[in-house]
Amino acid sequence: MSAPAPAAAVHTVDLDSDGWPLEATARGPRPVPADRLLDHFAEELEPPDWATDLLVYVHGWQTRPDSALSAVQRLLALATSQHERRRALYPELTPWRPWTVLVRWPSRSLPSLGGYRRIRDRAHAMSTDGHAARVIGRLLGYLDAHRADPSASGVLANRDGQYLHLVGHSFGCRFLCEAVQWAADAPGATLGWSTPVQPGRPFTVDSMLLLQMAAPRDAFTATFTALAEAPLRGPVVATYSQHDRATGFWHLRAEKRAGIGYAGIGTAPAPVSAITMRGVEEPYPHDVLDHRFVSVDASEVYVRGSGPAGAHSDHLRPESAHLLLSLADHSR
Image (tube, rainbow, N blue to C red; front, side, top):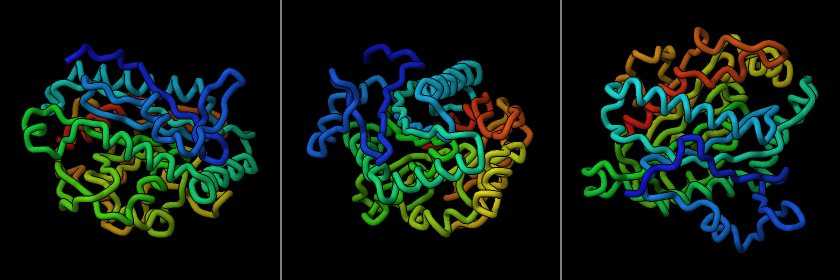
């Protein structure tokens, strides 16, 4: 097995305002031709043999491309540090070698109610009228097809399977939910968690971590209704903090109700397990996370931040890395 790449190494997929991927040319970025989409992924995104886990990260509101890259690099560094210091908490992650794809999209606006609504509407349009859900869905399908299969008995026994995890922040969570829901009309496959096996999905996701999601508390029963039947092996885990003004103050004024990132998951098509975010030395037992929907109160952790967003972007914490590693560990 070749040596792993640095933890901070991240591959990017840039979407335009219609949700279509861009490629670099001598004349600047241009949309990838539709008949070359999978070829483009193959040219730019080849999961290496050394990777144990594949991560797809989608950023949120008010994030510049360079800031999105810095954010995911920071999360990866925190995860690497946490794993190195407290390996006993993750007995199945031997080793932990993540390979990451960052999906970037035009999320900048004025820090105002109008700006919030503009990006909310753009994120929704990119995934519904636009192409973002299908493009990210095809990206996940491509990664699923090109990873070592963790459902193969020999691979699993040797712990050499590559596991696929989704991480979103703010409005980026909507893109991931739409992408996974897009694939929910085909039968699916599961393995390590308690969800039953249903072969035939276009891809299978091993965990989904939604950090400070910018969506109404009933989004999983009103909008993302198919997630209960989606190609998810593991749980949908959403954090929230009452110090998050973006999904509290701004979301309340824009949508007349608080967001998941402020008040947690309200209703869902399956029971919601409510837990408190744990410290970096306190384990998450399997049965704590093994639910279709898990709402994590991070109000004692995500506290930093000033201005209109409050603690909305205070998710780059060791505790977040601990939660991500725990989900990866329990996927085995």
